[in-house]
Image (tube, rainbow, N blue to C red; front, side, top):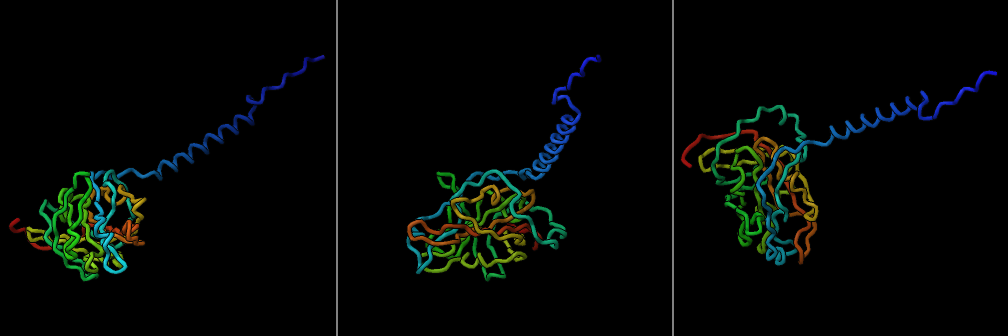
Amino acid sequence: MAPRRRRRPWYRTRAYRLTRTLVVTVALVVGGVWWAGDGEPAGTVASGAVRDDGAASRAPAGAAGAGHAADTRPGGASRGPADPSPAARRAAAPAPLSRSRAASLRIPSLGVDAPVIGLRLDPGHRLTAPPVDDPKPVGWYTEGPTPGERGTALVVGHRDTRTGPAVFAPLERIRTGARVEARRVDGRTAVYTVYAVRTYAKAHFPDQEVYGDRGRPELRLITCGGAYDRGTGYAANVIAFAHLTEVHGRTGSR
């Protein structure tokens, strides 16, 4: 009588080997898609943050209080909102400008025409704000890029003060495609085009997305938004994202 043939272990069968190969292949494909979607950061910006002046927030005019920007620390980088404008993507971007500080800021669609004052970091490495008793100026972070320079420039403006609406009161109404004109002391004007507007809760402010370096001249306009509380101020921030699209004027004295 012929000897009985021994049955192969399950882990050595052809069916098991084919199943194992299929599972490994699917895992590699899924993992590759996940890795491809995990975008690489675009760069870094100077460390700092925007300081919220509680005195103005606690003494609002009417139902509103003074506000301007986020109590976060700019650092790291991110892609941030994508530019939704095909025309802006097709337009030939001007070359970045050399350094020259900002003198004034205009947003024609909002009727904003404001002088610019320089802002620095406080001892806690947070960006300060324009004076709480003056609703007219905007503040430009002087340690960051000047108008038209490569990198992400930061501009802070109050939404309101004790006396009423301030320079960036209408910022939440800005639309994509709006022009922002930053005049420099050398006589040139860097013109930015808004490509996204976002409102972020201060408790979850995405500092890397807002402050990140995109590898081109960019601008962020920052003010307060969202619900207002007399004890804690505004709950959110309105951010307009813009990039350089034109340069006007000739270089003069600095």
